[in-house]
Amino acid sequence: MNHSPMPSLLGVFAHPDDESLCAGGVLAQHAAAGARTAVVTATWTADSHRAPELAEALNVLGAGAPRLLGYADARNPASAPDGAVRLVDAPLDEAVGRLVGHIREVRPDIVIGHDALGQLTGHPDHRRTHQITVLAVEAAGLPHLYPGAGEPWQPAALYAATHSESGIDRLGPLLQSVGKTLLAVPDAYVTTTVDVSPWAAAKWEAICAHRSEVARARPLPGLLARLPESERNEIISTEQFTRLFLGPAPGDPHKLVA
Image (cartoon, one colour):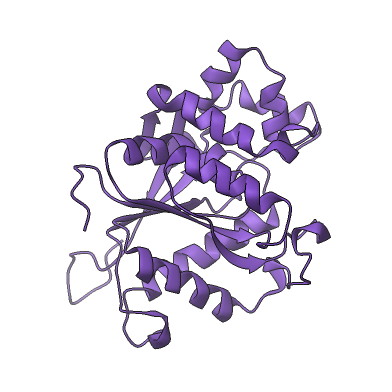
């Protein structure tokens, strides 16, 4: 049971490091307040080189041990030395069922995931993880769906980590400098903006735990590592989210209402 004034969180992200980059601040914030936090990672398997890095990052954030769906990254065969299928090729029903099992085990108040655009770069794994998360959050509360995945549990809210058009003034040029696509949402799409500056140090430590990405030139951890500390902190100290509609809403029972 969660005795913290903060709600419990379950993050669902595509790759190791997405949890730290997209929501490391709020995960650290909630853990520091005594709330239960956990993270499910859709790609990279337990025998890959990034699994220990993920475990270290989650330890820094207070989010427990890694929870892996066990799929391969769409663009990296090394993500699954065991030969697992790519997330984008996995049967949708199978992937949703695996995530439902984690939601019912963790029983979070809030689930946080990727936005529909695929988190700035539109990575296919990000988009697929968003789709799986939306379906799984609803399915987790329905007893006739995935009855073998545990007792039903309905999270109270689902938030998509996102980036607004006006909020990427520094991050945008950084990604474009290495030829990455930049996808941001209209400002009105953002419902929640969190100042995570008190937890920026923990967030950065978690990002740095993903050493293989920090060492590379194009991934965001490596780009951030080459910035002056003040500029880097400015980028990582704000996190934006969109609260997605979840569950039945009151309305006229006799007609459709927009």
